[in-house]
Length: 440
Ligand SMILES: [Zn+2]
Ligand SMILES: [Zn+2]
Image (cartoon, rainbow, N blue to C red; front, side):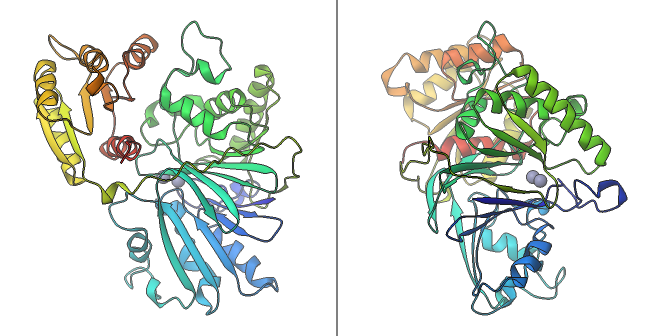
């Protein structure tokens, strides 16, 4: 399998003398299998030069599988300049997560309306198909591809691609689920020692990969004020990839305010940390033009197993119960969830929540941790003690980001633990991920 980086910048294209080495184009990675399957991971501005490269090769017709992690600008802006789509006979299959406000087709068509671009999406001569993905295993051409939701203020999926006896995992845009990675008292550096279920799931998704391409937009010093923006640090990536037994990591989605020296500094700090961790992880910062040939491994064990995929959330009806004793928080959350077309009911105390659940079983409980009398933790424990509500998904909202509180939440049986302050798009993405995982 061959991997080539065409865009490594996050958020906005940043050309200029300061970014010559690592590159200024936004996210785009080309994956080519031995039998010639073409997978394009994200379609940021880097896709322009990739398109020119494809057009210069004799292979016709061109069939491209475009796998979008999400549809933020920096991941789709190259698509209107993807020249193979302008030629009849070529084809493109576009994949992306379901659950944006509009369909994948409509989102891509939006940035090609005449106001913004001279050619509309439906005028493109190539045959284009659209595939909205939920979590699970998929087959794209001959390639096994798994998807898993990331932590970003938009529905975003990571991709695990297995072919030719190797695994490549693409994980951007993403930020840590928890400030604290390891559970207190547990041995650091092991997947089982990870505190937050979301981070543990993330580690398992990349486990044993030959190459992980991961968001590392910020230094640890920069991250604090940019929390909830949906990006992380090299420190998180090195620690979690090391624990997951990953062989090599390419840090990417470089911050537009970072010049080549800044990114080189991140690379050297990441390498020092990887050495300290002692797990044999090879880490580098991805740069435009970087090409990696991955040779098949004798001991390769596929992990993308067909467990079937859930129907799209949009095709199902969900009832969400919101439990909060703060009126303003309740109003904000209820409005956001109603905008997502869920049936939403409310309870203003732990006791009222238990009564409401007894009367009508919701599909998900969004539960405030700190409430008078019966708090969120007590509600969760009560639910877990009864067979009828044992597996009812509970998403806990809390201002408590410390390790003991997070651990107490998961030990009580919460499904997800979302810390304040959170943004509405972040919350709705986490709610949707919880609902998508409920059995249909
Ligand atoms: Zn991005
Ligand atoms: Zn994004």
